Amino acid sequence: QAPGALKAPPMATPLTLRVVASPGGEDVCNASMERTWLVSNLKVAIEEAAQVLRSEQRLLYSGRPLQDSEVIGDFATGPKPVVTLVRLDPAKAASQKQAMLDHVRNGGLLSEVDEYHRLDRDVVLAALQHDGTALVWVPKSLHRDREVALTAVRSNGHALSRLAPELRRDREGVLAA
Image (cartoon, rainbow, N blue to C red; front, side, top):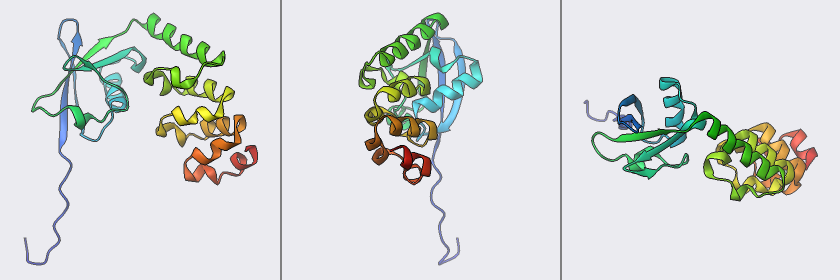
């Protein structure tokens, strides 16, 4: 490198996770990603590679259940990390979602809903129709969703302060507050 030349910043080290099925341990797929990815991103990759719906996936690392909001690089530290996929019965997955929808539609709190279903847009919208302040329990990734934002603000004008900055300036959202 020439003297005085700028050095490029180091590239993020990519990571390949081996995903195996439980029970049995057979390979499901290998997922290449950045260490900054969330478990929810890994679930999308598994859905695309193995045609297993996210709603049917429960992931484990060293026997520990993973939460969708966890950062891959925080737990996948070994040289050849392996994630175990436990596949839920599709009917059970649908039943669980319906139970969460019923819970929030009947006045139950979004904070009482498991993390996986707090990422489900349908569950979030149903909860916000009854309680706009529940936006505090909604993942940041959904704060930029215009329909989610408007639903929260229509239910409780104070939710406007929790929205992404570009949505706080949205004319319809401000008028709804």
